[in-house]
Length: 318
Image (cartoon, rainbow, N blue to C red; front, side):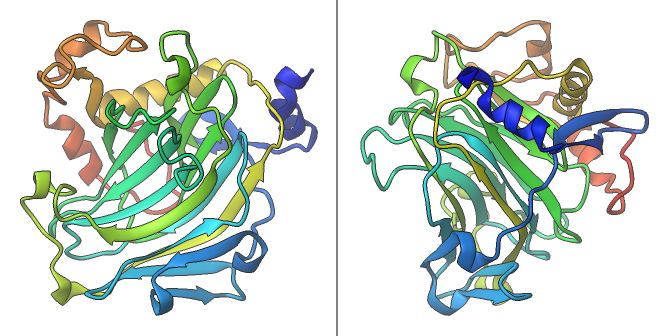
């Protein structure tokens, strides 16, 4: 029973809802819980006046300027759960800017920390933001498990929902209710699968040294302040171990379409970095679509990202 605790709670509360994953598909994702105000669930980390509250604390703006970035964190730590926020990213020139929405316990376990990352990487004017996900466990920072994706919408024009589902068996990253990545616990990963309580964080900071074209393009503070907006902040954590259930076939198909069309880098295909794939990688015929650097071989995936749809419209390219 305890092995299915989280899934049972979500289903019992009718917390799963159909979301668009294409013109003819619906996938089931956790329904947003009642959003917390900032004071109910979060605390400021840094940035003094660069963090501002709006809408009675239900919307948070964090900004980066010449002085500092800014950020906030959950008041508590959680061992598994569902965590999400609707985010609107800075527009115009944003090279070198990094907006992060992630879970970590690095403040408690300095040498053996776990981490689950959404990192949004800014770009030069006229080019899209990119999304990077990553997973660390037990201090495995020397072993990066990065994946990057182009988005099928403009993340600067409206809010879009980003979510992490974490159980003791699986980790799923979602964008607007569509799964884009699943990490399944295995013997091969061992302790590198996150397994200790983590807090939720949101930050904006200067990543000029690496974020855009490997550091070629830097933050230009004449465009500051860079403001990232957060709303619909959701913390649905568990305080006991629990398992999950296999991803429904339709949801998995939607994820595979997103990955085939929009993933632009995968660590499992990076032969320069990992001459032998990491043990959890299952590399098949799709490897032919990637260069030895792990970058997508075809530019078609980047062009998919430029066909931005209006907010709320179904994307038939998924």
